[in-house]
Amino acid sequence: MRWTIKPKPDAAKIAELEKALQVDEVVANLLLQRGISTFEEAKKFFRPELSHLHNPFLMKDMDVAVYRIEQAIANEENIMVFGDYDVDGTTSVALVSSYIQSYYSNVTTYIPDRYKEGYGVSYAGIDYAEDNGITLIIALDCGVKALDKVAYAKEKGIDFIICDHHRPGSTLPDAVAILDPKRNDCNYPYDELCGCGVGFKLIQALGSKKGETIEDLIPYLDLVATAIGADIVPITGENRVLAYFGLQVINTNPRIGFKAIINQIKKDVLTITDVVFIIAPRINAAGRIEHGLHAVNLLTETNLEQAEQFAATIEQYNSNRRELDQEITKEALIQITENKEEEKFTTVVYNENWHKGVIGIVASRLTETYYRPTLVFTKSGDKLAASARSVKGFDVYNALESCAEHMEQFGGHKYAAGLTLAEPQFSGFKTRFEKVVSETIDPNLLIPEISIDAQLSFNEISPKLMRIIKQMEPFGPGNMSPIFMADDLYDTGYAKGVGQEEAHLKLTAKQNGSKPIGAIGFNLGDKLQLVKNKKPFSAVFSLDENEWQGTVSLQLRLRDIR
Picture 1 (spheres, rainbow, N blue to C red):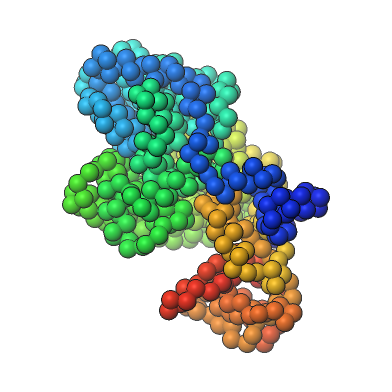
Picture 2 (tube, rainbow, N blue to C red; picture 1 turned 180 degrees about the vertical axis):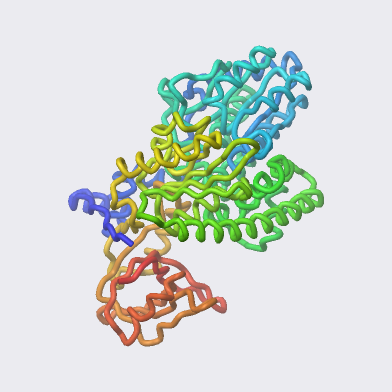
C-alpha cells in the first residue's frame, strides 16, 4: 500500500474555521479538505435541507420533457418507462413509472434482457413499444448515445425523452428532450447525479406543475439513495441531500419492497454502506441472473405478502450470483497465473462460458487482487462482451475510447464500463488496450493507495470527535469516511489473529502513555508479527464504534500497518 497524506490546508484558514465553528483543529482540517471553508457551508453540510435542491427547470430540455409528458397524458397516449437492468436503471424505472402511475394509468415498464438485448436502449424494446401502441418512451440511465435506436423509433412515430447521466458523444440523439447534466450545453449547477437522480428531477418538475412541493416526493427518496450508493457517484452537493433524506426514508418508512428485503436481513439501522453491500446486490441480482423486471416488480409492489415472495425469489438469485462469482473469480485467477509471461499494465481474461451477469463483479475482484485496469470477457450470442474496471486515478473510459476501432460499442464511466466486439477483433483489441494503458498510466497508480486525511495522536481521539464524524455521514466518493494515521504505537501484549484461518488482526494499541484503544484489522492477520512483543508500529485507521454486551466503545478500524 502507498500511504499518502493529503496536503494540510493553510494554517490561517484552519484557525479561522476553528473559531467560526467552535471546533478543534482536527475537525477544521477535515472540513477544509472537503471544500468547506465557511460557517454557511458547514451548516449546509451538517444540516442538509430539501430546500438545498436545485430548481429542476435549470436542466436543459426539462421544460420540453414536462410539456411532452403532459401532452401525452392529455391525449391519452401509452407511455413506456425504459431503463437498464442494474440498480440505477431499475430504481429509476420504479421511481418514474410509479410516480406517473399515481395519476395516469397508461404506463408500462420495460427493462432489456441482459442476454438477448444487452445494455441500453434496444431495438427489441422499440418493437415492443410499436406492437403495443406506445408513442412515448422515457429512457432512464441510458440513451444519450443511442442515435440509431432513437432514429429507428422516430421512423415508427415513437418519441423519446432521455434521462441519462453518462457522458454524451459528439452528436446527440434526435430525441424530444435529453436530460443529462453532463451535456456541454447544459448549465445545471450539479452534474454528478446518477440516472435515478435525473429521474427524480423529472418527477420534481412534473410535480411542481401540479402544485406539489418537495415534501410530497420524500417517499421516492429511498430509491434515489439506493441508486446513489450503488452507482458510486460522489456524495457531494445535491447527491448528499438526496442520500441523506433517502436513508431516513429507508430507516423510518421504506416502500414495501424495501421492507421485504430488510425483513430478510434483520438489521435495525441501515447506513449507505449497508445499502451498497446488502440492498443493492439483491436488486442487481435480478438482472444478473434472471431479468431486471423482477427488481422493478419488487420495488413497485404495494402488498407486503406479495413483496416478500418477490424478495425471497430475489434472495435465491443473489445466492446463485454469489456462487457463480466465486467460481468464475477462481477460474480467472488461474488463467492469469498460467498466462503470466511478462509484467503487464492490464488484466484481460476471457472464457466463453462465463456468466455474463457476474463478469462486472469478477472484474472488480481481479482489480482488487492485481490492481490493474481490468477487462473480463465472455461470449454473448455471436459477440464477445466485457466488463471493465479501473484503478483509482485512471480513466478506463478514455482508454477504451482510444481503442474504438477494435470495438462495436462501449459506454460507461471513468472507473467502470462495458463493451462488445466481434470475436475476430479480440486479439487486436487486447494488444491496443495494453498499449494505450502502458503509455498513459502513471506507474504509481498500479500500487493501491491509502489517502490519509490527517495525522492523529491518541490524545485527540474522543467520543466528541466520533460524534462529529458520524454527523459527516453519509460517506462515499467526494466525502469518504476520514482516514487517520498514527506513529509510535505498540500493542499491550494481546495481539492475535481472529476469524477463519486467523485472517483478521485484533489488538489493543497505546501511544506515549495514552489510554489503550482496541483495534480490529480485517484481512490484516498476516501483519501479526509486525506488532508482537510490543514492537513499535505505525497504523492507518478510521474510527469506529464497537458494541459489546450493551456497552459502546471507540475502536480503530485498521486499514494498514507498517
